[in-house]
Image (cartoon, rainbow, N blue to C red):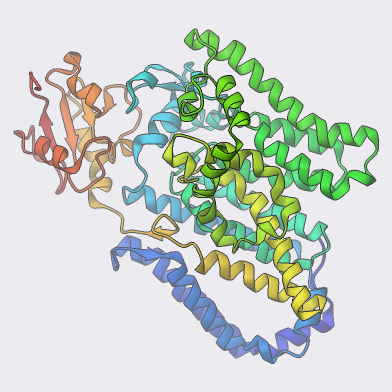
Amino acid sequence: MGTDSTPQTGESIHTSIGNRATWQLVAIAGAALIVLVGSPLMGWWPVVRLPAVLVPAIVAALLVTRPWTFGDLSRFALEWTPSRRFVGITAAAVFALLFWYVLTRFHSGQINAIDFTIYYDRPCFQTVHGRPLLVEVSDSPGYSHRSEFADHAYWGMLVVCSVYAVYASPVWLHALSAAAVVIGALGVLLVVRRQGLGGVLACASALSFVLNDNTARTLNYGFHPEVLYAALVPWVVRAGLSGSGLQFCVLVLACVLVKEDAFLPLLGVSVSLALYRFRQMTPRERGVFLVFPAAAALANLALYYSVTVRMLTGAATPTYAHFWGNYGDTPVRAFVAMCHQPRRVLHGTFTSGIYRTLQPHLFLPLIGWRWSIGMLPLVLLYGASANEQVRAFGIYYAIVLVPFMTLGATSGAFAVVRRITGGEGRARMGAAAILVAGALFVGVSDKGYSLRPWKAEIAATPDAVHALDGERIVLVQSGLFPHVGYDQRLQLLTPETLHDPGNDGAAILLAPDVSGYPFRRREIQALAQLKPIRPLAAGLVAVRRPQLIK
């Protein structure tokens, strides 16, 4: 990955900073670490937003080091290349920070059972026991008691779930989410360096990939398979730019195994490669880098719906076809209707959440359009959806765009600053500052990186479950469900399970101050007023399900 900067530049920078300033930087980093680790554990503040910690730390570091006094800063931006050791240590630190963030959300009750435990964590446990991705009980009755393969082609999850054979724990998936973002950031760093934009801008681009609100919203879920796109796509791009056909094909197939919609990000990769390398490619390379990705992904899509879905459900219609039911009752009819109503599709896109998605990247992907144009089909498709979360590019839906937006923003920022300054070194340094500032300051919302105190109810949940060992069935509130383990007598509390006559007399484990979705807060509080079975830790209540629920 390269060597350190030239001795003259490295020594001059180190001399400018000095030993005293070095210790001051260590103190600043230590203070930030104390806040990020101590606040959730000690409950100092109800919410700690990551930018509120990082921005003061960065400002303090700048005041200590005073980089504007360095005479060779522009030269440093031109010559510095991060060493393997620097990249490795930084990647490990970023992984530790992201893992701590996801783990803290888990223990603060911010990761709900819906879309984590019921669809990924417990199905992984079921997989290693011979029931591939079995969903036991969902918040939506139609998705209960069947494999996730009936809904999505999550072939790669079979590999992911294999670690549950060693030890069953949701922490595996939390760690994978953090690792996927770090791996993707390393891929972005290498792509930017491959373009000849230098180590400073490459590192800033990787940081913006990690820090932006779109990535944060995905990590908020604890785990979703689409985070694997963020890990793989930058490496597919890197392999394509370097002309490594075998590596490219292997990574493409890995993307195909993530989900049935892999043809969308892979199409984006092929379009970008065509814009950057088409004239230099041989006919064989055009087949490998431009045709193979979409062909492999579309073949997987066709086989999945014609064979797997038909075998598991008796129908070839996608489970989520109703997301585009505003255009037609089948995918084909919806697609035809979209083609015949381009104005309606464009109106849906322009009124969707794409603007909010572009904000952390300062709309610079529109300037670095060679990286962004290939994602237009996905943007139009999501913008046309009848589902508001999809249209808003909310929750994890934007993560597939993040690699393309980051690379596009990097190219756009460099082009703009170079046009203004005229100097290569100043352009790299200025573009780097813009990318990081955009990720930290712009588009930040309450859905971004924020730490909350660990909840006592969450910590007490395992003991409460142990106290209910004699109960035949325990219906568990969704906010507590990720923490109860994998015993089949422990079921998610939903309207379906609550009204199921087979659950007469079941115990119900509740925590009124923890999320109870799909129930409203007042419904959870009403259940908590029933006669308790036995005393539990403060904040937790165990009641008996009534024999008759009106």
